[in-house]
Length: 513
Ligand code: MSP
Image 1 (cartoon, rainbow, N blue to C red):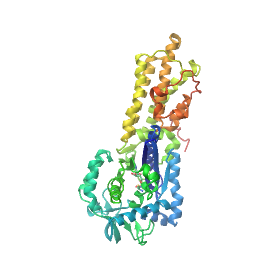
Image 2: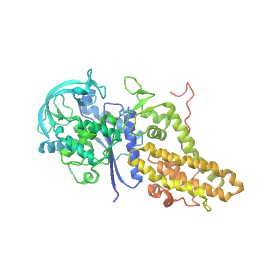
Image 3: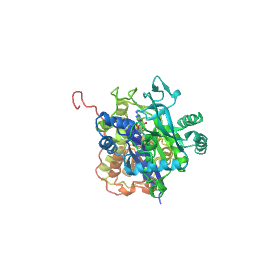
Image 4: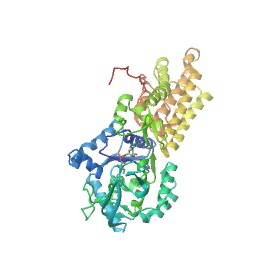
């Protein structure tokens, strides 16, 4: 049976309109999931919406809506985003679903039974925007230093989780799981935070009601982060520890933004260990996008709308740009110039032209069928070997959430292939040595086949079109067909070639919009 692979996106606060940040996390997860699927794993990709808490309740009240009606209405925006970006998730969880609420209450009961939760009183700072508690030394001038969110003083009865008792065991866990957090620099931040000493964590609230009720004490609702994190197991059917849970837990990787790493790398493994459950295998934190050098914010009015990006540039270029432009894990800047450059130079010129040149020469000169190659030269073998070695390199990068390096490696072979075309000049061979021309075009078609199989996780649309044009059947597009295992069969008729990565041309001023 195929090896399981479980990957998750964060669940998104429904009160926000989907923006580039949401699209980015999910897109990366989608590419990782598609990659593992093509590599033969039994993949489960989970996404969803985070619908409880003070922030969402306030958003509903501000609009005069009942929170349930409000969340039912706006949660759909994130499904639309998933559709627009071509995300192939296996499950979409909403924290207002009964299956999730039951799981949260079950986890709570288990923590109580194990003596990990006690009743006390919270007095301290809280930022509704972050849904987070902050210590005195984490705030300045009424705001959380880390996020800039305004904080308010809160005093209320509260249940506490004995987080203070878990510091040593968390550090030991990090020690024995050196790849638990990526990138490494972020892991160091996590370690330092835990080494600084942990306070018990307030895990219930009483001053509002929009949440999962604490079992046997309905005046309290479960703290929204304990509620939200549980989605990763509630979607696997927890508290039933058979079925999906047995197959897919612990998760292979939770992909999150750097702002929510602490919840995933400190609180979540502590909750799980305290409940006697296994922590996830890895948490990867990506950076934040800015827009033309400026922080993205609603008040600045410079939010990047992923729907608009896809509408203007197309889905493949948008996906390619986001995954290629910025090393995954670093902060990055969106610029329209860079988006245009990536679309035109990387996709249209480098990749698109390589395929288009090769396929149209085959159509024009070789009757539109896969050429019959003669003996391969050293140069032919070298290019075929480059393409055949590529999967291992790409696999290595994808295993550590480095899609930018995976794409860089793929583009290095694209560059080699373009150099090969220029050096072999098959258009000249047409008259002088047609048999050699057929060999060269075979090598090129075979290289494009390998490339198109490997680019499927990143640009599913264009890659599929290329594979269609090479008459590669649907069931021969997995990574097991890379290299010699799936070589094109000479004589196979090919459909008429069409360009798949068009150049982006700026609409003339005054038109469009
Ligand atoms: N609901 C919580 C997550 C709970 S997971 C159990 C949450 N939601 S969120 O909607 O506010 O953020 C979701 C993700 O979007 C986070 O990973 C966050 O880092 C990411 N981004 C929000 N703005 C971003 C950018 N400007 N750039 C990149 N990602 C950003 O937090």
